[in-house]
Image (cartoon, rainbow, N blue to C red):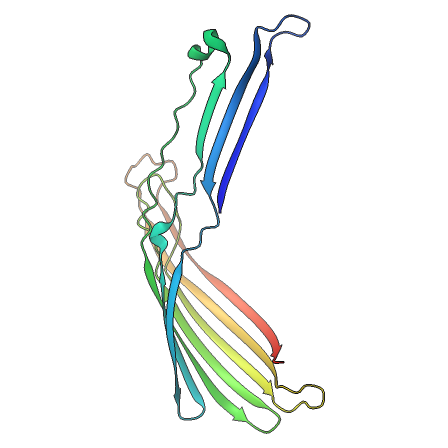
Length: 218
């Protein structure tokens, strides 16, 4: 999403009740920034059934993170306070930010589903999944601080299928539960300058996902 914002203030400068020292002049600001970036992705996958009760699905996703724009705002300021005062006003120069230099990544995923229990009125599926997403962020040795880690995601799931619910439902009713854990291994960042205002730091962590889905077909 591109965020383009601008405003202009027009006015006079002077003491109340006296003729203005500066009349009908303006201050302008224009800011352009990028937010909520998502890379375009290309995914290819395949599924294989081993025996009758085991299904294995794999896919690869190519994510174009190299197109990630610098999220900082490009800010332009201008002031018009007349031919006498404007040259005496020193506005800060427009700051130029270095490129983010993210790189493209390939994300592999695998999932296994096993039909653990099968009866006329109830089926039970057990599921396991894994994916690995390398960080697209380069080493943050300079001014920028894009904190990101590699991501190992492990997931477990159970699926209950009720095939025979006539006359209430003509199609099977499915209840799925899943638990996922994303592990972010420790990443150390060492700044090139010993006087960097942020300094060196370490990032790591875990992300937990829990979900419950009820679905049917029509």
